Length: 565
Image 1 (cartoon, rainbow, N blue to C red):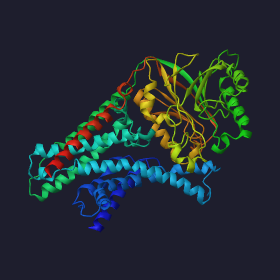
Image 2 (image 1 turned 90 degrees about the vertical axis):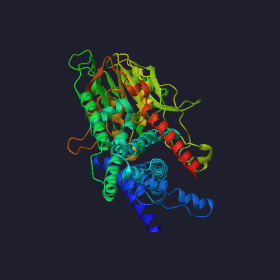
Image 3 (image 1 turned 60 degrees about the vertical axis):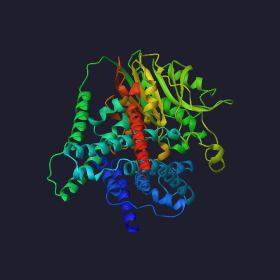
Image 4 (image 1 turned 180 degrees about the horizontal axis):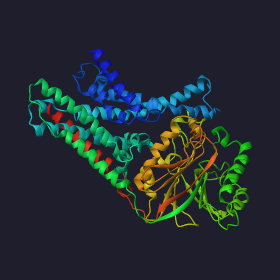
């Protein structure tokens, strides 16, 4: 029995490793459709261990077996998927490449990966417990029920399993500030037809389809085996039809959404500046002036009128997160920015920090037109835990306070920044705010708008993180049906249209690397009368509905079992 329990654990681990293949590094979409099959086999096939131990803790350990199966799957997925987190501790200690930094630094980095993975894997464990304890298929229905009853049994289980997964991804996106990174829907980023439904249910809602189809595939195969063993004549069941209809509906909707439109647009000429400064040099006092000068040179090259023209070539220039190395209210900023802003009529959006002598510190962005004074500011609302503030500082401060001695404060306003030189509003999303759909949708107004992400992926060196960040980001453009511009210090500087397609990116023409210095110019078409999508209006309504349904089912199922005893 003990050997069988360990075998189940190994099979569950296989599910996690398969799911890794759906994300950057492999980008095999089939993995997101098939990853659940080994875990479901571990949860459903054969008899699970019976709780026989004496003592509360031993009984709890045995009773939590199915939870631990899912947790193992989650750990085996998140450890490789988030391995880039280890570079943050290395960068803090001066790393600019992948050279060995010594055991203390390397262990600290891997501790961060392990801690995050262990925590996020809890959601896999909860899903496994729900699937095994609440919605486990009833074999008797397949053996003795009618075609309708047998088909409905499979649909019921797959439906609840899919809703539970979506609900847990939604909770993962906001609980304890949230980290909704790399949900299953994100793995579909290359399938432009299927992902168009994100404007209805959000990226978490897209996760329903691969879970529903994967679970149903497993159930149909299991039912086939059971009915064959029982000597029943094999006949067509309509449970498989539901998966076909779901995919067909999603494909039809996506095809319609991808058709060219004749909506009136405003041409917006944008230049995205990327300096590719190593993270260890960004706030170096001796390099700040050099960075300012280089940003100014690249900007002047793009906006200064040429050949007798009276107007520059661009309406908006964007510098990435942390581009302004000195505090935003620094006394020399007016003298630096004013001559640059007066070269032509354009808006300059820059990443900056507010560090007043007295009062809370903020990080965010500022947009200027003509002069530094009167700049519009946005202070970041969704801060990064352990990066921009230390959660539970009263508890963790003695251990981690030296690494993160102070906290930024979250901003309080979610207002777009209107450009003064052209009737378009800028929606500023700083750092990984472009991965938080519910935050981005709160900026939506019935005005011409463009989403602009200012970010800095330099903390994670040349790893899979920049590509993962981009893949998570593209869904904001689809969910809100607004074009998205991404200006990164290091990462993927690019333009994304409202259908989620990357229309241009800054890359080395020979190697394809995105880790270069340069400017990416492009004229984008901003819808003059943009729609307000269902997701923009109602947010993660589908995930919330799934949470309510699953909680109700769990409550009544477990209550009835308790009563029956």
